[in-house]
Length: 139
Image (cartoon, rainbow, N blue to C red; front, side, top):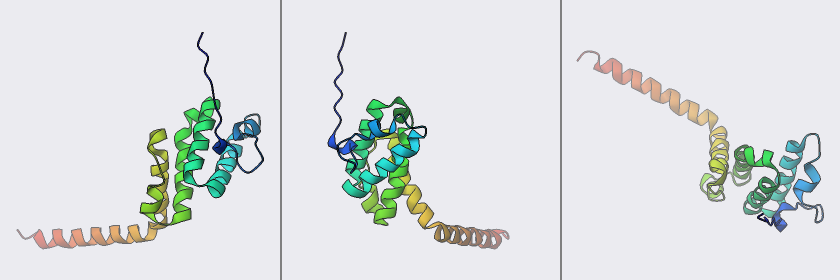
């Protein structure tokens, strides 16, 4: 029989003393919200790398978190972009684990922050394409 040792890193502890996040949240009726709040706290207090490490720890202890790790990382990515409001800086804080959820979240945060600008550029591009097609209709 194999014995698996599981070590909780210090990052899996928000600023609530030394009680790991999974221990505080796993038995709560809405553990997902609890985990998200705790990960938010780690992100605010300790930064993006530590928040992603805390997610790693949660995924080790809770199979539901492992299954849904991409959405958790995605949420962290959106918050990282909201903090930095600088796409390259925020993107560089992510890592590819959890199907690149953090990267996806940063990209979503960036695109949402530019929604009107993207819509205007898209509409201008469509109008320009229509004008070009009208000019070519005589050929």
